[in-house]
Length: 255
Image (cartoon, rainbow, N blue to C red; front, side, top):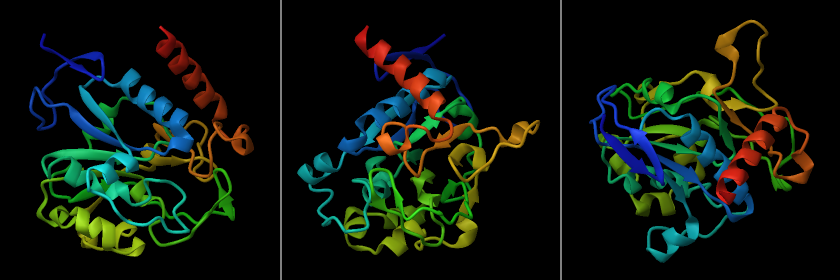
């Protein structure tokens, strides 16, 4: 069996779903220094359960600024450092193949291969198409909660980076276009946006598990209101799952 080493982890290389045998699946995770532990736990939860090779890269705003890829001034409504940098995903993937962007406040409970196998080349992007209006006025550590069409669609996106339409997402466009243009995917037609089951972006406090219906069990929990790493959200739904993963993550780092 062929093996590959990614992020210090050894993985078997498999040919599946049109992906070449030696190419890891690229995953870009939004990073904010205030949520470093959230990033580490998200990273750990993906690697721990993945049966395919993956390449996980944090999108760090300070690094992008140093490299001349990001120069946008931070707006008052940006609750994280990756509010806009997320849209650089196709550029960071060299406009080649498929790549995933995900917020750092996710906990993966299933094999990322299951998500990757949902990919359909006819789409420019694929995401969970939430119908979501938050009830809270604030989230996380007091950040203002905004309401807009297609809210949370951009929090986990599979990008067909080589799709001609996604070549629009140059650093220039990401730095100058409006939040509406980017977060509502206005560079695309509706039929170019594929749908993914909600369990891959299961919104804590909004989506519900139906007892006895396994199709409603979360495969990736999104602590979009705020997670247990914030004092105000330490008792949120599914907090115990995140805390258990954090303990495992910390123990492995100490080793």
